[in-house]
Amino acid sequence: MQTIMAAAEKIRIGTRGSPLALAQAHEVRDRLVDAHAIAPDMIEVCVISTAGDRIQDRPLSEVGGKGLFTLELEEQLRDGRIDLAVHSSKDMPTVLPEGLAITAFLDREDPRDAFISNKAKSLADMPEGAVVGSSSLRRQAMIRRIRPDLSVVQFRGNVQTRLRKLEEGVADATLLANAGLRRLGMEHIITDLMHPDVFLPAPGQGAICIEARAGDPRTDALVEPLNHEPTATALACERAFLAELDGSCRTPIAGLALVTESGIAFRGMILTPDGTQAHEIAKDGPMSQAADIGRAAGRHLRLEAGDGFFASWS
Image 1 (cartoon, rainbow, N blue to C red):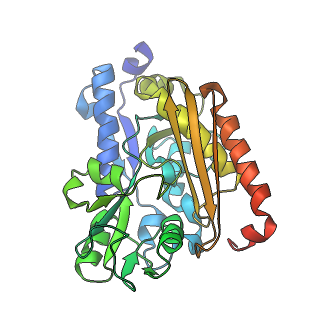
Image 2: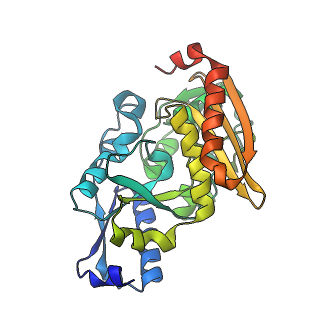
């Protein structure tokens, strides 16, 4: 506490500028205020434009992947212009720049995908040939796996942009993260929630993470009370699974770790982009071995699928 309060300068939180990113950054700010009795005006939310936000006419898989949502924030972290960066965990690359680290995970929201449509009650109810819009290769592949008769189109933009495209008839339905909609107070637009047994979420979905300079005692002390250990354990497993598979926005990968009193249960899946091939695995074990469980699951699927399977991702 003394380390935190001794500093007279403001605490600067970096974030992207979308309504969801701002909601997440303000949630972190509010939790810091509550945890440390800091005056709200001593915490500044700094909006930083990222390439992922600016490039809207091409799939992320074609222009650089997940790092497009973090690069500019990380540059400002490293040179000291901001103290913390707030991210959606599913946007975070598995390898971070030297000198930076994820220092906290907030308690995870519901990780399920939400189906949204004015024309059908669920994905299963959509008529043959209907159009589903999504920017996620994972969602695209899983839609094609479950409903190969549907047409899947690229659907970039923030939540509000995608909903507007839906209203304009660009697509008959879309899928968004339930967690993001809840953080925006938009649960009312959800038509159906996809059960993870049917539609496995993205690794990290639903969890907000905080990135900071590694080994910085001031920011470590700031965020320590915000860290939710069960979420951190689950994400250690999911991110290890991703790392073993070299996961990025170019790879259709799904995975979810659940932490219970008895340990951790993980389920993972890899798919070809057209959804015609998929490999799944379920593993469990003690929470202390979360990362090992994720890595073992990734290695198993890589061996089971073989090199030919992964060639379809390139």
